[in-house]
Length: 338
Image 1 (cartoon, rainbow, N blue to C red):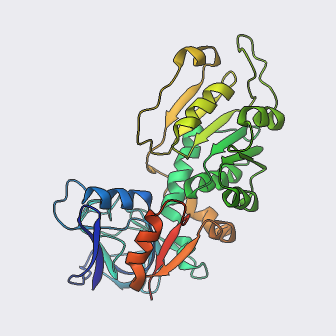
Image 2: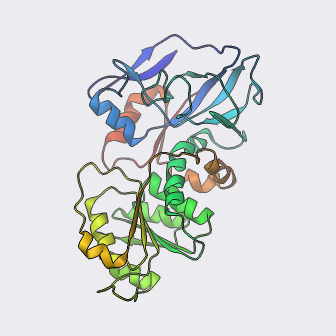
Image 3: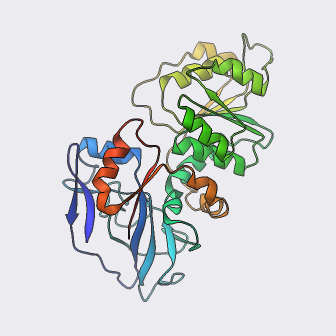
């Protein structure tokens, strides 16, 4: 079968490898779609994923159809459509340093158990939409870390896939008002289509002033200057300007969750933040959220479908990786299989 591997710094290759088979406790899954993540580009740039040495399989946003079920496995049947928890594979993280990757014709799930590595989903949802399950779980964890109340007002920085996923999870929780902030007009239009209550183009508007207009002004004792009554902020952008803006905007008792990867150190003026008592939390992966978000995708898949910008067949996978790695060329690229 074919599989995509990092074969050197800045280099991926489609290689022929032996097709896996299912043992008595395993499930064999034929891949149907797999999203390209920013970390795939990072792995490629570095030429591999520790601790694995040499050629490294890629792909950790997969969805597929079960084609073989081991004799000792219960809860699954041939033909089931399944999403995967790529962090629970017993042969290593799928597509992130483990023995297999989702950009393959087939993946074997060893020691398969329902609700652990796999969950069955309805067959009527497009494959490429179900493949959003993994990144949407990342977004859901960020929202859970923020832990907003239904009456809260929240600002999301970044209208890429994770920011939009956070928007959908915030609305799933019934959050009263969500503003999405970005500098790309078509991203902001998509945020409105998905359900944002308002958007701010930070390249053209003063973010603090607009947040005060939308969420009110914080007048808590000891807080100086113009501060927004925004209750929570999510950084899904990873730009230093986000921290600077939150420091400027945050009123007393606000919360900030950072899910974006910051590639450079960020200067933080703790003195300016002291009277606000801002709570800062970081968000990584999806300890419990991988199958929590599945229900919302099943119920609202048409909204999730708007996140996908490009659907490219597996026989053009190298082109798909090049597109995903080109700044501004695409938002969310999903590779589809026959």
